[in-house]
Length: 123
Image (tube, rainbow, N blue to C red; front, side):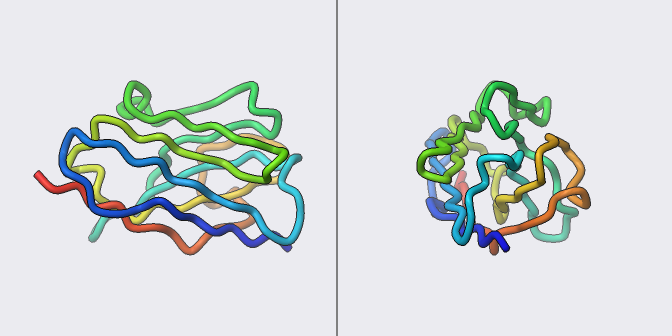
């Protein structure tokens, strides 16, 4: 069983930055692809970014590619999401997820989920 714990969310002004972190507890996620998703009020959960188990390949929602960066540190069993130039429309709960081996954009293909961390961007 893998427990994922997100941190780093908060309130930030438009144009600011936040760095989200996801710690994996209970077992190593070195052979898991990791993803970030977000869900805004009244909207469906959407894909943000994902990274392969080795960290050698990443995937992003097209509209976020220039502002968000996903990375991982397998030695620390942790994945991060650097978010720059934040906009009010980035306001959402951000979730970390793990999927055995294969990278995917599809939420229903992930095996484990964290509880989420709130990101609020004020205008």
